[in-house]
Image (cartoon, each protein chain N blue to C red):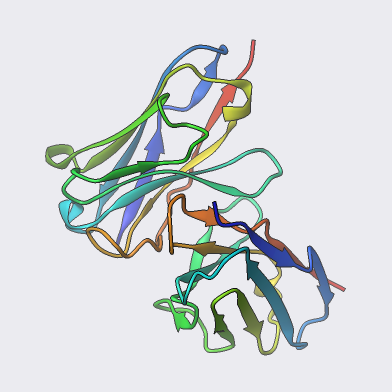
Length: 121
Length: 107
């Protein structure tokens, strides 16, 4: 069974940093792209970033480009999201999700339970 | 950026009724559109990929259609567990984008 478990969320001040982790199990981690999607309280879904199975391809939403960095560690079956220069508007539940292939099948299933990031002074 | 507009925002129906949800893209996305279901307090779940392909384990009452700019998710006969929020997502171009969602509520 595929399982994804996010961690690393919390309360941070504007301008601060956090690193989110997504621990994966139940599939060949390096064979699948992975993504981060966020959801502000009471709002809809917003795609954040994606990384290929090999880690060589990445893309970012314009709203986080230059501030967030996605990465993955095959030896730990874990994906990361380094978030710097955080803003109040980054407050959201951050979900990680598995892609349908290494690269190209940008449909996401399953998703983790999410981790809450709150940016506030 | 491709904008996905979902309508209606809220659909009030009774169990057993047919639900028809719309997703319109600001430019063609070919058939590169997916549908997700999200229940309160839960993560989204993939229902449909590439406009019409049901994901593994998704009941046959869920069907997707459309291409280009106009897409439809149909639930043929609503079950109690189908009352949720539904989102569409395009993968035609970067950035990936989601629609604003349609809430299917019990009438």
